[in-house]
Image (cartoon, rainbow, N blue to C red; front, side, top):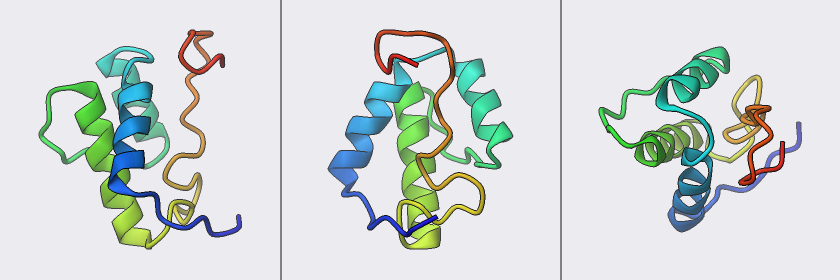
Amino acid sequence: MASIPPFSEAHIESLARLLGECGSGSDMTRVLQDRGLVDNSRESTKWRRLYWVFLTVQEQYGCASSHPETGVFGGLRHGGGCSCCRC
């Protein structure tokens, strides 16, 4: 996978807010675990959980695409047919 430059915190927040509307908190937990992404955010809202997970992984790998399996944002489509991402 080619390296994607880091996203700004504002972009990460926007993506987290959008994706936070897709699915339930337990769906989010399952997808993050399936992708090997650890949620140590101690946040209660879905978008804040995603924000901290995405930001932490991006800081760890130095870019938006360096997570070994998926990149920070890759593979997070949940397949629910929702209006927010048209999966």
